[in-house]
Length: 489
Image (tube, rainbow, N blue to C red):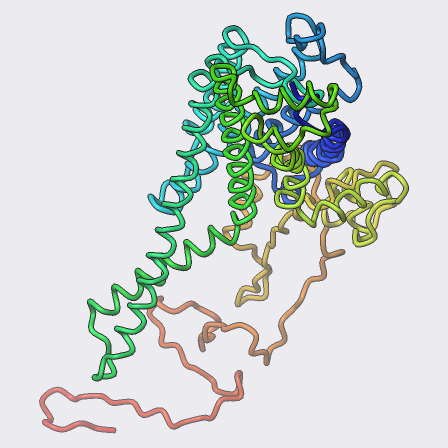
């Protein structure tokens, strides 16, 4: 029927739409390869994005397979081929249905994730990850299997097979529109919450600015702080997710438009079969003009949907891959690819220091920094150099009698040190330092006047200020006589 109700250039326009899918699949495959090869900080890959792009790629395969197979649409003079009589029809129809279901499900999951983060302050975790994978790929397989086994696909217009009209609304279009409607509802609710937070932030600012005392009250300040914090958080999430939100809205619009058009086509087809009087003027025109369909195209209104609407649906579906590249691609991918391509042709980075190159393969102790360079070099280890060992000091203290003694800590360190470890001289040959007589570098106890006996042995110790160049004072000795009643100086 398509050949009779549409002009001759209709199939040429459908092939143009199919070639748009070739450009779209180039975009989606390049994104998938970038997600696989480039680092995360450059590609910003995420499982919600990757799975959505895979779903769009599957839907594009349904339009690309007929370009290579060039199938025959007609089984006989009045019956088109279906998935049982044409293998290309089976594969193109299966990819189209599976891609449409997968894209719709992952759009819904993205909407749920965004709604939880913004409205409920819940960050999806591992359970959400596994649940999303199970639902995002399990439900499309289930519904596609049911649709192919009960309804089937056939050539209805163009070179791509589409789902038949028998039970299509209950098995395919109804559940698909339900998930698309749920995703739309979540998006609208999320935007409504964002607008509410923004208005609340403005009202809180006005309340704080109208306070005549100059010092806002505790309650007003608390509300203002919460509103501003919520507004900043919501704005930050939108700033990071606006590309994903845009592609979600575009795919939802395409799916809803596609579903409405196909449901309308099924309705008009069934109405024409049950009421042939609607097609009587068109049939009489064909008989009168000897089968010239171009002379009777104006009589097809009400029998089929307009040519412009069908081509618009096909073109919008073909543009999804290009939209994915524009909204889900990152500008940082371009320099990342450039660096990845030129990496085999350039040497190590210039910012690595000579010492790092020399020591990266085999880090050496602090004393061996000036040893000859090692033959091996690994540029990935220059940041993991081991810190030099801390030297152990053994201070030498001069005793009052001029002998050199070690501190107790040095003996303990020597006792616990392993004799098998070689001792490294970090500071060269040790030179003994003898403190002069008139030195202020370290304190010394005063000497005794009776031949060097130590204090505490029953003899009085005098202090001679000349040994330290200190200012001298007169020493006054006090003594009390027993029974005289006075003191003598």
